[in-house]
Length: 262
Ligand SMILES: Nc1ncnc2c1ncn2[C@@H]1O[C@H](COP(=O)(O)OP(=O)(O)O)[C@@H](O)[C@H]1O
Ligand SMILES: [Mg+2]
Image (cartoon, rainbow, N blue to C red; front, side, top):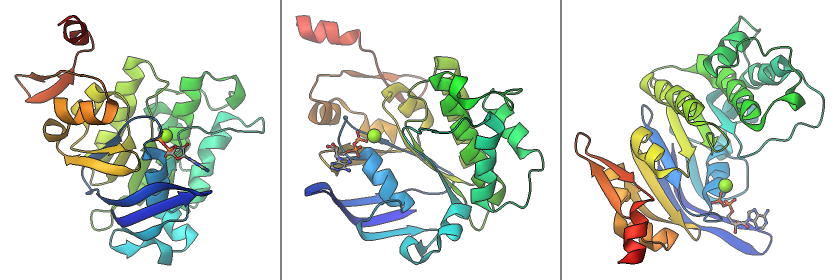
């Protein structure tokens, strides 16, 4: 998946300026950056959900030339927040993914997807009665049913996930990012907006760092999660350590006390 010279204006405001982006199948590509830096807007542009200039290609095809069903069959999108106005049951929400992904019928994939996100047995629960984290995992199950079966080595499927672990406890953060990793290991592509820098370092193969609607850096976690770049984009002194067995960058917020005192 590639975006070239992507610009997005909303209202009278320029939100993205000339963003170049590339994500490879088989890899987890993370987008990080401060609130309002344009991460969700970039994800929506890559998904073909908002008007943008420049070009976005998916498996070599310009997405503006793909029909909606062709797009839906190849990429599933988990938005940052999803409101459900009607009293749907959990299995009805997950089944929407099947409809989007053009699968003929439910061959157990709803149940399987729910089990993957640790919600086995939740099929008949009313969506509205779930906790925020449970709702988020139901939405992920929906997206999984949309694209999982379409996975083919020569024509990968894509998961575009906007802050999928924001409302999850640490165990379920690992569950969900593990699902994303497995998807990539099977040849799929994953683009995921993240806030937690440690989880980003652990799960991402490639990181894009955004600020003020542009890309300020991209590369491996070790090359991008640096003191300088984090200082530039977040405006605070975040001393980055390195796990010796990695090498894997980590942020220890407690270390900031020393910086503040020094
Ligand atoms: N529909 C809109 N109209 C005007 N401004 C918007 C709209 N949507 C988002 N923005 C602005 O675009 C900027 C980037 O938003 P967003 O991509 O959601 O940021 P992020 O996901 O990095 O927090 C923000 O300043 C936000 O206020
Ligand atoms: Mg966002």
